[in-house]
Image 1 (cartoon, rainbow, N blue to C red):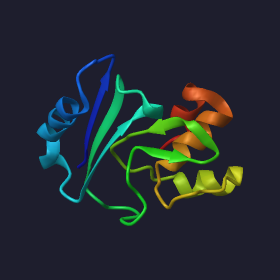
Image 2: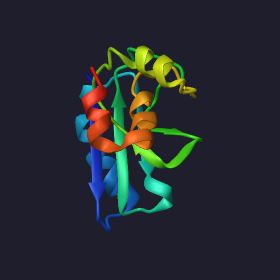
Image 3: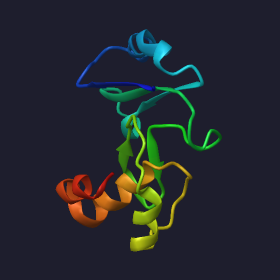
Image 4: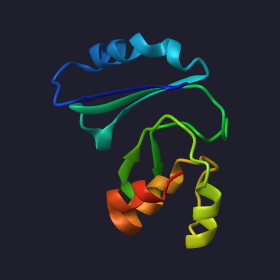
Length: 118
């Protein structure tokens, strides 16, 4: 199980934000990442990782070069991600199953993406 933390619209300094994110450190013992979205301090994500898939390059939030303005944090497994990747011929940048969410979202929006995931 991973730990996901997000804060939007806060003017707290980065050290205060990071301390808040550390309160869920027990949820993911393998790694921690703290990101400000596109450099803005009032929109940030913290992620505590339990590495199951792609332990080397599977850190979140996920961003891929093809979609630089999309950020993804999620907790779970997507069982049909390889089938969807092959069906739509998406080129993955990582080996993380969740990358399929970014590709499907770009292709068809949120509702279609949700309907396709298993």
